[in-house]
Length: 132
Image 1: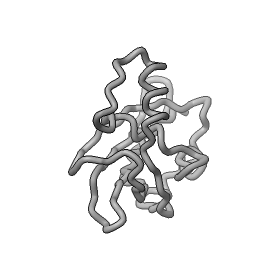
Image 2 (image 1 turned 60 degrees about the vertical axis):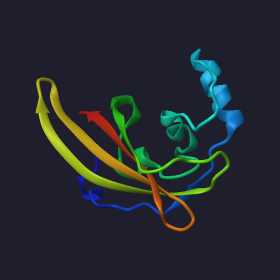
Image 3 (image 1 turned 120 degrees about the vertical axis):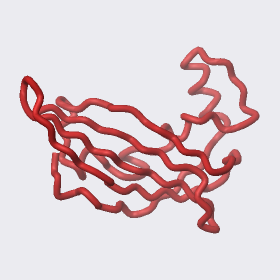
C-alpha cells in the first residue's frame, strides 16, 4: 500500500440509482424486492474501478493480498431513483500495523455523495486492508 496517498482526493464522478439494477441485485441476494426507496447498501454497486475511483490501483494494493474491511454509511437525506449524484472519494487515513505474520495496512476512504446543488445526501466510509 502506498502511504503517500493519504489525503488524496480523486476527481469527482457521477452515479445514478436505477430501479432495474437494484431489483436484479436484491433478487440475486434472495432478498425481498421492495423498491419504494433506494436500499441503503445499494450505492456501493454503482461505483467501481470502471465508473469512478480506482482505489486498488491508486493505493497500490495487490488484490491477491487485499481484504474488504467493511462499509459504514451516514445518510443525510433520501436519494431518489434516477437522481444523478456526484461522488468525491478521499483517502482519509492509511495506517500500518504489525501482525503476527507481517505488516498489515488499513486504508479508510470516504465517499461523499451530493446532489447537483451540492447538498450532501450520503457519506460512505470504506475500509480496505492489505497484508504483506
